[in-house]
Image (cartoon, rainbow over all chains, first blue to last red; front, side, top):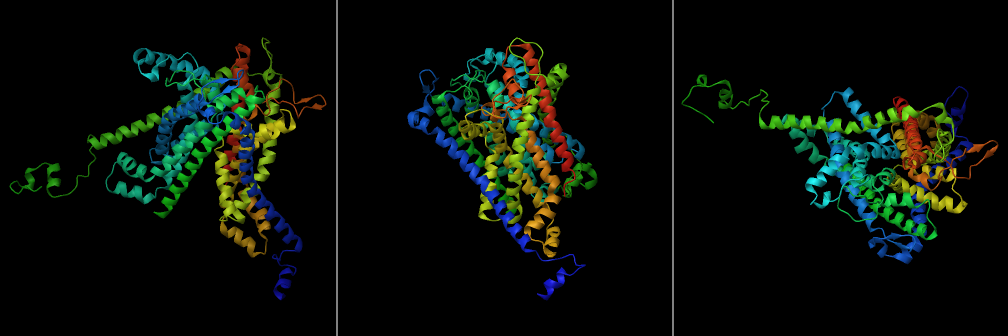
Amino acid sequence: MRALEDARAPGSIASPPSPWDTLADGVFRRLAQAGAWLILLLLGFILWEIGAKAGPGIRDYGVSFLTSTTWDVGREQFGILPAIWGTLYSSILALVIGGFFGVVMAIFLTQDFLPPRVAQVFRTTVELLAAIPSVVYGLWGIWVVVPAIRPLANWLHEVLGWLPFFGTTLSGPGLLPAAVVLAIMILPTVAAVSQDALRLVPYRVKEAAYGMGATRCEAILKVMLPSAATGVFGALVLGFGRALGETMALAMLIGNSNQLTLSLFSPANTLAALLALNFPEAGRRETEVLMYAALVLLAITLVVNVAGEAIMAYASRQAGRK
Amino acid sequence: VSRPSIGLADLDATDRTAAVGVPRLQRAPFEPRALRNTALTLGAWVAAIIAGVPLVSVLYMLIVRGGSRLSWEALTELPPAGFEMGGGFGNAIVGTLVMVGMAALISVPLGILCAVFLAELGPDKKLANAARFGAKTLTGLPSILAGVFAYAAVVLVTGTYSAPAGGIALAVLMLPTVVLTAEEAMKMVPRITKDAAYGMGCTRSQVIWKVVLPTALPGILTGVMLAVARAAGETAPLLFTALFSSYWLIDGSQVALMAPTASLAVLIYNFSGMPFENQIELGWAASLVLVMIVLIVNVVSRLIGQHKV
């Protein structure tokens, strides 16, 4: 007790907490804990809210909702198979294009290709690509991407029209322009996460490769990429998750036509675009089935994103062990 | 390979090194593996430049097409109807600022509270791990689903499309970004600084309020600004929560807060599908304004971030 009283003596800068301090401490700590709970509650609330509102739709349409291809508000027939197909098809296309460029960009920025200043220019470019709003990409897609790829698309249709991928002409909106814009939008995600993965590879691994006389090409392809493979794969999965849920650019570019097609130039539909276009004017019944569609989208993206996060966590644990 | 019958002097330089087992140390630029290396370097450059093309093209279109229509009138007037000429998107700018402001007011305090727990109070507790996982999962939530959620939780309950519904949808999207970046920023505060404060007899809250938060402030602000920039550009969550309106949020003395509210992003989307030249031009001008807002916020966040611990 002597020590405490001494500590409070004038001239000392240290003092034990007053009862008020202790109370404030307890309250604040509880508040912060409540903040952490809030995130979990919010996630649960979102799941519950969408799940509960989808209830009537699930009850009335069941599994056939997932396999039927008609969307007819007048006859109350609803099915989202074309939208699911379009979502997966456009996202996979975008992942092939955007994933390739994203990973190359990550390698380019981390493997000593550039002096730091120039690297900063490219890094900023990628970050700005991520900053442009989706709706602006949509507008740009309508006026720049569609006219730019139409001649090529129609030429491919004429020459290789017997292939199902080039089975139709590109008359305006369609899968390919949507996928191209989507690829640009997921590139920053893939690039950022793969950069993290490449940086997790211990420096001495790279040094060892160069010490053995490997060229940069060999060091990257045979040492760095295999070492960072798990993380790069995680980056691709997370990019895929982004693509699945992207809405506006697709609603503006994909053409919103409910059909199952392999053709890259044909209009199609995605779950997110379906929601964006039909929700504002939906009646009671349609709102219920749209909630069902939202639940399907939520389930797909949740699975993909959780898988991506799990892969990334595994990758960093792996790197920690080395 | 030894060649005992020939003396070393009879061989040219390359053979000589091979003969005594010393590796050839000169660079051979036309060796297949060196060529592959050059090809890869070139390929990486080409791919990186191609990846930069869309950004240049977007900015060029915005400046040329949006810039030509941008005027004081466009910034301050109400949106035109069908065949009308002129008009602007003043109410949409106000609407965007109001809704992003609401979203920030909700998500920033809650997000920082949560981050305090994750970084300082119980970084390794089960709750912290679960909350961190939840935040990462929320980062991947498609923005349209934030809209669906706000529609179910706010629009259906209050019975009207409104600015708060839009603000709540945006807050759901901002929250995980704020939490995760604020946590990172607080973790960067050096252990010894905190220990010094504890040594003076501070409670944990005092350490957090007087040492951790002020030191981590630049990093936290960077995260908040990035979240704001993202929210300002979001369209999908506003489509059926705030909807759109052709009128001012504040008309004379009346504040129409619980009524459909305009936003730049939804205006661009609506006008992009219209067959009228005037609206499309306005859509481009609105895009330019929106991108400028987003980029300015981004640059400011970067400037703040430079002063990080």
